[in-house]
Length: 162
Image 1: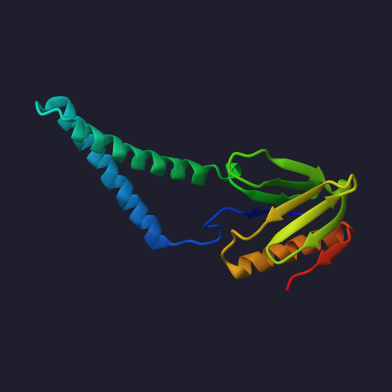
Image 2 (image 1 turned 180 degrees about the horizontal axis):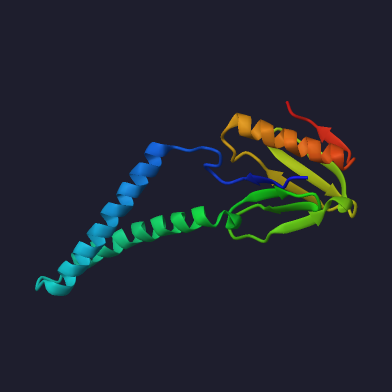
């Protein structure tokens, strides 16, 4: 069985080329402005707290962009649902604890419109929200693949999509 990996973070399965280009231009402009302000503050005689404030404000934007780039290169720290032949691994929020359980532990699966609930044999419940997926076809395909895996494992499935 092939591993099924569903990204559950905002912007998943959406690709906006213009937005990526704008972000790249913004990052380039911010870096150039950072360097220019730093040179001006270090060389110029007119050291002013106003310039320092503008510099620090731009640094916040720069660090935000660096954080976005880092998260795009490390999607495992974002919300995800990974289904393997052995079990399920998911993370419900940014840098939160990752939950993992085997298929042998699963008693029943409830598939609803925007979430999946796994009920374990020890009556523990794990609910994974799928509402962050914006593309309907990707959401439908992920649900179909999840249904097929659950059917292969012979686990009772309750599909209450309305």
